[in-house]
Length: 81
Image (cartoon, rainbow, N blue to C red; front, side, top):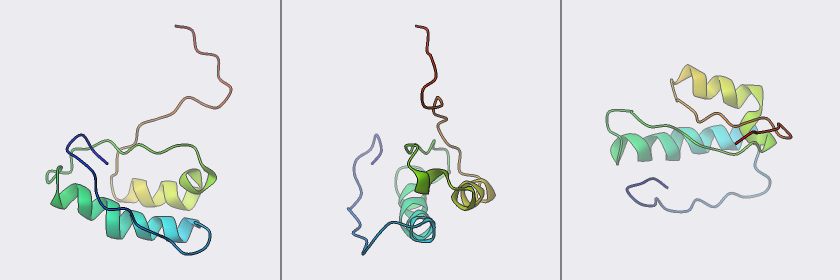
């Protein structure tokens, strides 16, 4: 999903592992971004703090490919507004 619209849903079999998630990122998310609304690669990737999203292998995968991410405030952090 982006400001320019939605992509197709992608069904997975079984539990989502870091390996499956990395494959989704490589074969679905990045091609969608580059072939669609962000051909110059200028986008900010947002995901929640689910364990599969924050495991070191996934973080390394994103970093190695230069994917910029929206940083989340740590769970339980006090935010003064």
